[in-house]
Image (cartoon, rainbow, N blue to C red; front, top):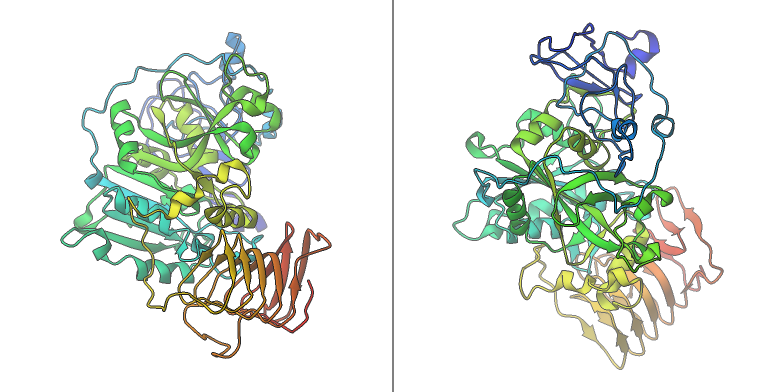
Length: 581
């Protein structure tokens, strides 16, 4: 046991004495420490040579006898020596025992980056066999992860990212939950943590049992993060969050119903998908884990901030995974046609953050984790998936052919919103955003409102914009490429372009019937206006000087923030007439 001040930051790390090959000992659970070392209490099964394993690196006392996965996974090896070092982390399901602790060197020092063309791939580990007992949607439990911290986005200072508004009417969380309901998933668990009050209220109000259809048995349950006597910190990563609820039994239904498969979803991504098709891929391939992927042209995405899967070209089996690859590593991960010479024209399989885990894989990879030390974290993309690859789990990809966009920062949220109205305004990847709010086939559910229709008085010009219920537009206004939330009132001769108004919950919410939210003659360009903001007459909010970053906020949290060139007027702010930003 560590002593002194270190005892507060490190959990007890239990080690078994070294074990000879083939010797059986008592089963236990692994721990992850702050230096990303996995240790495990001995287990009741024959062991290979004892070794110390570090998460995400190659660190051993002797060469591992089998392959193992890592963030430093390489597609191919030209020699037996390279093949032995192809992968780097022992799986959680493999017992790890040691009679000593060892601090591994950095990840960059552990494995040489011998990049090779993506045309050279390893042999398949096993043949694809359909599942002997296919899983049905009735036996799938959906887990929506909606609690990640996001302190750099001015919109998430008081609410979770999954609670951000989209398309004036919806919130980001509405899209994965709508996908579940339309795909006949009957048990949905929403895991929250960061600034969760608004999100909890929204989910509880928007998803009564009736949304599943009258006579159907379904529910959407909000599961907030929790602390225990043994673990007094909040969840440390997406996998740790699921692990805590899994071990507590919270991911079970009435009568201790337990899913045969877990559908893991990000609550902060925009897409429409029928998960029944993904489950079909899962059953037909006999996969332990199925990953939803989006095939993207490399020049259209920021691949260095995404997870990239290596998939065989003639089937769906995944043989490698790299989280946030470096630019020179993309040559290895990209799939290029024979006549393509520009890397930007090649394609990559981007991890969508959508997974189907079999019950066995979930318990063996996530449920066995005993403790996570403070100062570290465990995520599905960065940690669990690479270890599953290294443990010879059968992992397959399900390709999603429609629009998909993760929302990780203010700029992505802003451009996705405006692309609903004007598909050609930004990059090509946003071209399909308008299909998100097309309810001609599948519905998108949200909190119902009882508001009057939008009203235009006099002659106004409205082009490529989305106008919500309760909005009042006065004479002489010009609105272009903008999203206007509920109950926003414009004065005369207002000019608005590429602006997002979050709106208010009701008419005349704060300022009264005679006071417009945007005063006469004001000009707004490239802004985000949060709820309950009053902009006086003659204000000019255009960031003419092109400031990239600034913050003017008083002690009450009122004011404005410029992030990446976008002006965000914070909730409750009152700008006096003639204000220029």
